Every structure is written in structure tokens, then in C-alpha cells.
Image 1 (tube, rainbow, N blue to C red):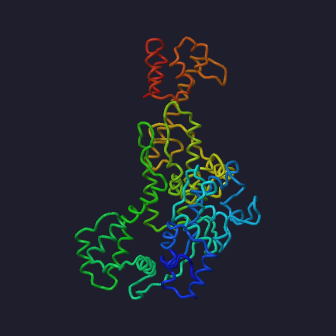
Image 2: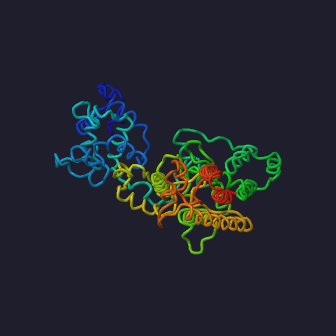
Image 3: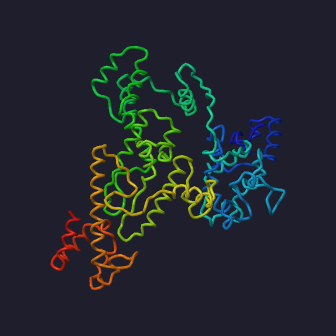
Length: 492
């Protein structure tokens, strides 16, 4: 059947008698009776559309941007009891007119949504003018052709199991050397573009070296490649680059971006933090060709694996790559919860291909996630021992990556600090006597001290920062030499 859009312009303008026979006039007349004439801008856009409209790639973005505000998942904002984000609802009889449906497969002419989309009546056109959501000619053409082709509906793309595509047909079957070439050539032929001539070896080595290592090749590497005249010269070059340390260093960039990696906290003075060991773990994983399932498990829960190695625990620093707000007046619990939000939402983006930000506050408007489901997942990431407070880029829990001798030395120092802390604590029990459970600041002996000194005494010695230890030492230097000596011994 001849489509209206295929008719010559002079026929559409009424001068068909000059060039078309009577049989064509009868056919044309029938077409005018049974086919809708698309607006010119829509018709022109229609002619440039690909052969097949894909729901996820072409249609869903239009519905999400222009229709879901009034006909999406938000019950409070939904108009006319029409929901277009679910397949069953989009093709169901309309509540106010059961004889019609928003979309009717293979029948764009009688699909009510298409009719209103193409309407030139400001009282009925969709989206309505007051919404400020206007459909372009191309968007209208896409929706029209999609319905015309059968209105195939698809699940969210991240829920569709990837399948190997059938190789597309090409005219120049001599050009492709591998399967990827078929897809490239198919697109080039569709656009009417002739492939370039084969690149020189100098250009090839520069391209592939930049792509795989992020750096240009050296002169020696170029000379070696030019001198290799064997059939496997290019394959050998690629194998050498894949085996080089530079490969992991280059391709770690992409993962570090997705994992929101940074060497600073991102707030206020933006202090440094030591996250580079996790960066190096990613580089090693790529260079060792670690399977992606193992790569995922170790970063999400490597510390929970049986007999977890130090490297597997290190991998979980993925969950500590969030920005960290260490501003002095911030409530630690607020920071801790914000960090859990960040872990939850990063997991959704990186591993599920979904945006989780919206459903923190309400059921998601576009992705199929309820607010309740968000907080079910949130609970998994809410089980860490992070306290939401820390300084100088050291926010507990931290992982000691020093060597055995260094760790032993640190352990000895920590034991000495604990001993000094206990000695000072016992001394202060005598100087500031109080019932069990109270701090030195709550002792009657501390009532005459000013606010800063009492504040310092509110913490056990090991938790006082250097400023408050010095403050107490200076105050008691001439008042209580024994206490001063104890404080100095602890400080040293």
C-alpha cells in the first residue's frame, strides 16, 4: 500500500490530473480517505528516521521528558487517570472513553495520544501549551512511526540481557575484516560515506598506543613496528600494549571516574587523604585481567570474604570514595548518613545502570524503583563502623598498609600511649574525684575552671587534641607541678 508521505508534492497540491492515470486517482482518493496527512515538519522528520524505531533509545526518552509529568508514576500529579510509563496502562482502554486507547499497535491513526499530539487545537493538543513541554517535529514523527510499526515495548535497558547482534548487511562485503567492521560500514553506507583508505603504520601505532596506554609511542617503538613486516605485526603490537603496566594505568581512569575517586575530601580547605592505594589496586586488577565478577565482589564486600586478604579488604575502599565534610560545626551523624546515601546511589549507577538519587525522597519518576526499595538497599551500606568524624584525611575505619616492621613499631607506640593514658587517667581520678561514669569536668574540683579547660577535661586524655593538652599544661604549670609533669609526660 502506498503511504501518503510517498506521494509526489504536486499530487498533494491537487495537480495530479496532469501526470497520474485514473487508476492512480482512485488509489489516491482512497488514501486520502483512510490516511492522515502529517504536518509538514513531522512528515519531513519522518522521512529521515531510521528503518526501525527502538523503544528504549528513541521512544522512552520522549515519554519521560514530555509525558510523565502528567501521565507518569506520580499519582498526585497524574491527569485523566492515564499512565504512560507502564505498558499495560499505555495500551488499556481510556477511563473516560473505553472505546479508545492512548496507543493502538499498528494503528497510529486511531491512537488517541497520537491524535492529540498532532492536533493544532490549543484546547486539546498534548502536551498542553501551559506545560511548556513542546514536542518537536522529529519527536512526533518518532512516536507516530513507533506505533505504526507495532509499538514494541521494552523493559528498562539495564534489565535486558545483552544478546549478540546479527551482523548487519553491507554492500561492500570485501571491506570488513572483522565483525565490528560490519557495523561501522553499515552506518557509513547509511550516511552515504565512503570509508577512508587504510591508515599508515605510523598512524596505526600512534592511535592504538594512545588508546591503550594514554601516551604516544616512543621513536624506538615506532621504528620496531615499522620493521615488523609480518602478518601479525599489528596483533603483536596490541598484545605488547595490553601486557604493559600502562594499560591498567590508562583504563583505570574510566573506573576511577565512575567510582568518584579523589585524593582530597572535597570540602572547605579540601585536605588530602590517602586513597591512592585503592587506585593502585584497580590498576593491578586490570593488568592482571581480574574477572569482572571478582572485581565487583571484592570492591563491594571483600572484607566479608572468608579469610579475606589485605588486598581484598583494600578493594572495599570503593565504598569510601565519597566526599567527606569535616567542617567543625557539622553533626557527625549527618556526615555519616550522607556518606551512606552516596554509597547507595553510586552502587545503583555503577552496577545496576539505574539512577537512585530521585527515590531517596519519593518513588522514582522514571526508573522502576520504589522509595521503600531504596532504603532496603540503603540498609546494606548502613552497616559500616564509620563514625562520621575525623581529621587530616584520616576517617575511621582506616587500613594500615605499612610493612611488618613498621606495623610492629606502631603497635609498640600504641601500647605506650595506652599506658600513658591510663596513668594520666588514674592521676586525674585523684585530682578530680567523682562518681563512676562522670568525667573530670563534672567533678566539684573543676567547677572553678573556665569553659575551655572544663571542656578539655570532658574527654579522657587519649581523646584530647594537642591544643587542649597544651591549654591544660599551661594553666597548671604554676598551680600544680605534679599534674603539670603528668600532662607533659603524656604529651611527649
